[in-house]
Length: 420
Image (cartoon, rainbow, N blue to C red; front, side):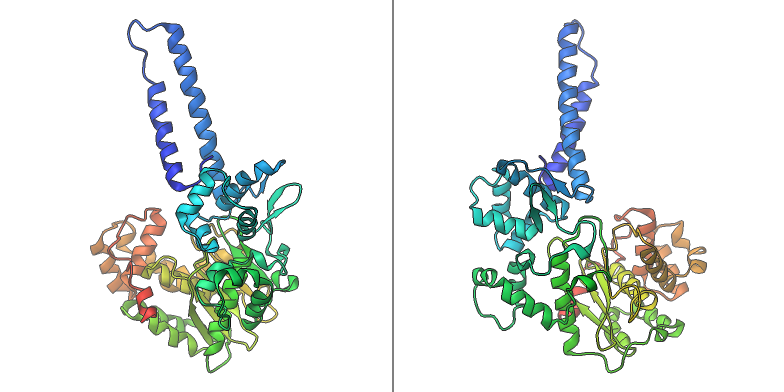
């Protein structure tokens, strides 16, 4: 079984090598029978490796969410498959459990033979695996299947390391034991609606299986932070108009534009919160509404680049304008903007961001659309009054080539502004 990206790459390289060997003509004078046996052996090896690669691809895409574990000895493989399906790396799982990545690598290499029963339980809880007469991902189809009383499924170690249990002074191990007290208090402190009814009104854009407990914990934290310094006025979606959007686009020209955007959003009742994603969630941002009628945009800065910041910010603003609010279809929308849109409301938010930042009328005549050079991007940025990173990001996204224009997308220029 392939368990990580390094093994995945080496397996694909091995397939290429074996194919090259299989395609070589037999040497002169070689025994035809021996040559046929050799070809069959190579073909069998290639097929076996291709099946391993295909399984890893299907797991990583979230296509597989149920894993056969007919005997207890099958459980380790089910846990490894569940981790991959969750979109979690070995390091991500280690962070959740509070152990080093190398420890997870050892566990998986030896199929958890040295792990205690308590550790196996911790791993299954961290991955949100429900074990019945089979092992399956809890809530892989929809958020509303999560059991809000299964507090062990929450990333307790990571929450403890980030100091989210603010009135708790115990150790990580003690936090795990007290999860049934700490997690409910944390969620209520964030005004997080974690009842099954509220979960019906959430939407998650993801390229893999959804870790609902981690999403819920992150949402609660975001709501806590926003509630400490709410905007001075209630949010009114009508305030997101052309003039306000144009003023926000103008900030893309300013090197300190991201941090200046905070006040721009506050003026119309929107809080902007920066909070790193939790392991296994791969979130870029979220749009939410609060109980006191404030809008809320939360960004993870998973990709610390100006182009990603601005597109994700406008995408979430699009959700606030079009989809979020009291009495609307959704109370919260969570986004991995690299995942396929998949739904109408995600397509609408993508189009909203795209048109607000660089309308089709401008993009149609943009020089950089055809000449993907730094000079072309800078020329278009000056013509259209938008930051070069926005145009460079559009070029890269439409070309599907993220090696283009790397010096213009503002790598490393966002997170440090908010840390200061």
